[in-house]
Length: 355
Image (cartoon, rainbow, N blue to C red):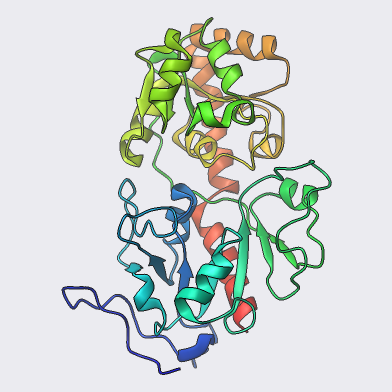
């Protein structure tokens, strides 16, 4: 297959540095470190992809005309660097690609159709599993369980333990988030939660717990799908906020006294880690990976809903106690979920799979 130079946009602009053809980056002669790679990756989860594209590699993002799920391209509500480059499917066939980061099973077929290359055979590949098993918790077999040539990278230790990964090699790269700064003021005596599509996700996202608590205490919800939640929970009128840009969202969250994480069954919401980094104290269920993310002193994790409500009332009445817990939350998030560690972990995995 002929190899072209870097793809150009309609205005003729270069979209990134030229990489060696056919997927094997060259080591730098002086340092032994590999040169930046050209990584094909779909924009699936905005917050996670925001962290990933801040690395040293050029990220090739498929974009389709309607910017649908298989080609969203660059984010519109996050600030991404110039190294995140959009490519239409027709441009991918001859594009220099060193490695592909898959995130959904059907991307295997999209890759072959759009590039003519097969993951793990013609092109080094890894598969990021963002989710907990959707079937029986301990018996669900991973879609790549029969593949030994594509490592599965889980975002939490809990997920790697729960999925039946079969013969697929596995790794864990815990989340890393950009530090928005200590934005917490807590001046508003209310709780905040971030939940996208809460009605569709229902009990998985703890929407029933969220709406029940909102009958007792002031709770604001941020995310996509707030119109449906307004119909489902009319008592929350005036406290539902649709799809804020990230910078605006962080500032708005920091005004609330505490963060509520109602999820029953999720990997680990990045919004939770972002709230902690802002400096918010946390209330949430003691499920999945949350106990690792929220240490004692940074908040309360419990499956006792009355205990969570009591702690919320305490913080609403004692802003100093809430602020102290928020300081502990921010310190823990910066130590354990910083961007530098996340990107270093990904450099290691990408270099390993392309070696």
